[in-house]
Each structure stands twice: as C-alpha cells, then as structure tokens.
Amino acid sequence: MRRLLPLALALASLSAAGCESLATSPSWVGGGLAVAAPARKAAAEAQEERERRIIAGQPNQVGAKHILVMHDESQSKPPGLSRTRAEAQKRAQEVLLKIRGGANFDDMVKAYTDEPGGAERSGDLGVFERSTMVKPFAEAAFALKVGEVSEVVETKYGFHIIKRTE
Image (cartoon, rainbow, N blue to C red):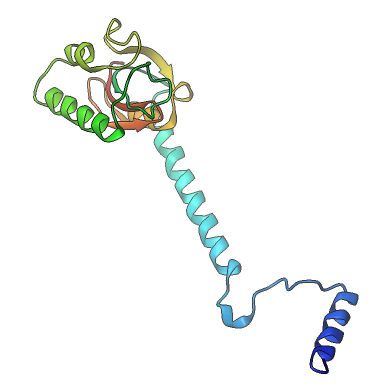
C-alpha cells in the first residue's frame, strides 16, 4: 500500500493540473505519428495527383461494349446462377484468349455474357461518362484506345471484358 500512495499522488497532481494523457510519444518510440502521418499524407496526395493527370488526358465520355461473366457473389446476378468466383474468372480469361486469338467480340458477347439483355445489344453500353460506371470499370474503359480490348476487369458485378467503341 505504501508503494501505491506516491503513484496515486502523482496521478492526482497530473489530473489536477489538467494533464490526463500524454500528447506525444516517449522519445524512445521513434517519432510515431509525427513521422508516419506526414509521409502517408504526402503519398496519398501524390497518388491523387497522378490520377488527376491521367484523367485530364482522357476524354469526358467513351463508348464501349462489354462481356460480363457473373458468379454466385455478384451483385444483381440472375436467379439460378451458381458459378463460383474462381470459375467465373477462369471463364472470363478463356473468353479473352478467344478474342485475342481473333474471335469476333460480338459473337463472344452472345455466347458468354451473363448481363441481362446484354446478348441482344451485343454488350453495347453506349456512350457514358466516367462517373456513370463503377471505378474499376471506368478506369479500364477510359484507358483504352478506340477498338482496343481490356484485360479482365473485376467489379462487384463480376468479371468484364471491355471493348472501347468511341
């Protein structure tokens, strides 16, 4: 009990002085937030600036077609679709290989897309702005040149193969 009394008195005097917690890390910690936070902020700002420069060099709108291969975790999947994520990814990769091998994109849409109504429109999404699509899809579509086909792109809807048309 005698050893606890000095500690209790010291804590009471700190509390009475308005100090309830330490505002800085001890010197032996190595800087903590004072060092790491500015570095993280600078890295985030540099990444944002790179993204701004990329977007500034791209058009405001593009036209595209796509093939969507959905899986059992896909948002808005049709009833009865029971393909696993791994199976969907493999199927999308196989379709992309066929396209790279010379298969007609429209024929591949009709044979493989899971998008409701997609086969009837040949996967055509029309002309759209970047903000219309989910970020991974928009980033891929806007980075393509007219006529170019993307790699497989994953979104919450499944796996896409995108062809820029305009």
